Image (cartoon, rainbow, N blue to C red; front, top):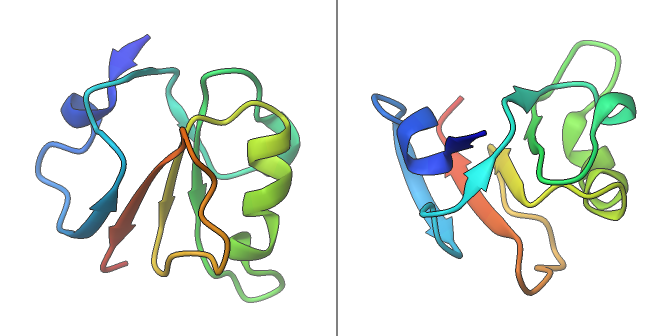
Length: 85
């Protein structure tokens, strides 16, 4: 596991909700592969938008969400990091 703040080194961060001082597994873009203490990266693709899978990732155990826009519902205990792209 790595510190989220270390994984975000050199990333252009727009805003943070929660703390980046948590341990997470390496980030993954595929919500089907998310498990406990994982970081989920929600990106917009040509076919689907990862932001549509944030709730699923959290239900599967993700503790950090890296996204371009914050979801409408912010879950307590989850760290959200808004990035430019």
